[in-house]
Image (cartoon, rainbow, N blue to C red):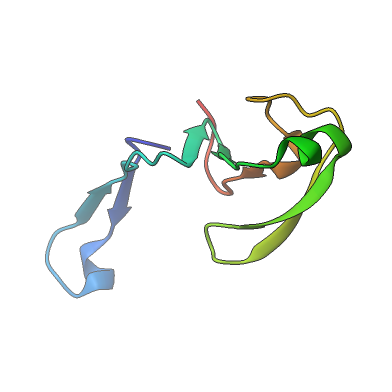
Length: 92
């Protein structure tokens, strides 16, 4: 999706000619995009990583979702339960 160009027909915008928008993402220390998967870095307590827990995280649309962190989660490991795919775009 980064670098994707979106075309808006001028007549829809009430102008002559078309509008082209190029999509780029701003780097963020907590959010990372890999293909269509968006990852958020979340800090948890060591006992939660060892025993498992549930977290409430925000989505890009400001909805809150509950994410289950399984027991024995290792530092830096990706939790497949927490992935949300971007809809309407093809992956790399």
